[in-house]
Image (cartoon, rainbow, N blue to C red; front, top):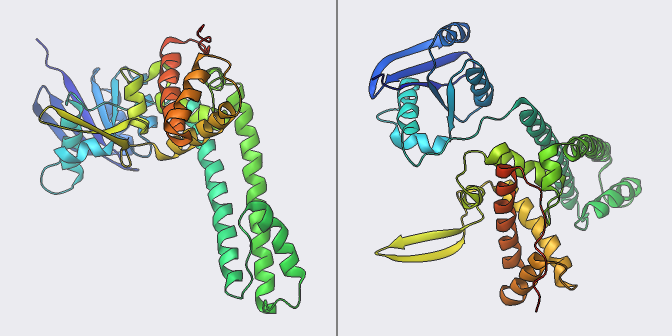
Length: 346
C-alpha cells in the first residue's frame, strides 16, 4: 500500500524551503531558488501540497492545482504550535507538514483569479479610504494646535478647510497655510480616487453571479456581498456548515466549557474576520432600524422585530448578521437563491 505523500512549502519571494513527507517519515528537506523550485515541482507525482497562508500562497495554490496536486493553505496560527526549537525556514516547513495532518485544522479555500482580482480592488479601495481619513485627521490635529477646531464629520471638514485658508485673521501662520492647502488637495484627490475605484468595484460586484445573489439578503450591499463571498467561497468553501462559517468570521458566542458546564459569552474578540464582521453588523443595524419602525413583512422580519423588543437593537443586529452568514453559506453551498420565509398565520 502506497503511503500518502505531503509536500510542505515555506514560501518566500525567491527562496522556498520544502519538507517532503512520505507517510510520517521525512523523505526530503531542501531549499530551492524560484526557478529550481518550479522545475522540481513540475516533476513531482500527485501529492498533497501544503503551505502557510501568506503573500503569494493563492498563486502557488492555483499553480499546484493546475499540476494535479491537492492543495491545503493553513492559517499561521495553526502552524506555530507545531514548530519545534527555533524559528527557521526548515522548522517552519516541517511544522506546516505536521499541522496539515491534524483533524481540527481546517484549510483556507484557494481563491480563483477572478476572486483574487476583486479582493485586490477592494484592498485598494480600503487603502485609499484609510489614507484619506489619515490625511484629514492629520490636518485636524495640526490646526487644533493653533486653536482652530473643526467639527466631526466629512461634510464639516470639507466646508471648514477652504474657509480657514481664506481667513487671514485666524492665527494660522502664513508659512503653514500653503502646506495645509496641499494637504487638503491630497485629501480631495484621495477621496476622488477612492470613489472612482468604488464605482468600478460595485459595477463588477453587481454583475458577479454569487455576489448578486448575496445582495438579496437583509443589510448586505455590494461590499458586504463581496466580503462574504471571499470569506466563504463558492460551494461553501471548506466549512462543514453555516455555524462553522459564522464562527470563523467571529459572529458566534464565545464558549467556555469545563466539568460538563457550558457558559456562553459575547462574540469572540480574537478569532474573527474583524473588518467583515464590523461591516455586517453595521448593515444589520441599518436593516434592523427599518424593521423596528414598521410592521414586519415576512417571517424573518417578524423574528427580528420580536428579538429587538426582547433583547435590544444591537444584540438583534448581531443575531441578524449571524443568520446572514449561515444563510449565505447555504446559498453558496447549494447554489440556491434567497427567499424570505412567509409570515406565519395567527
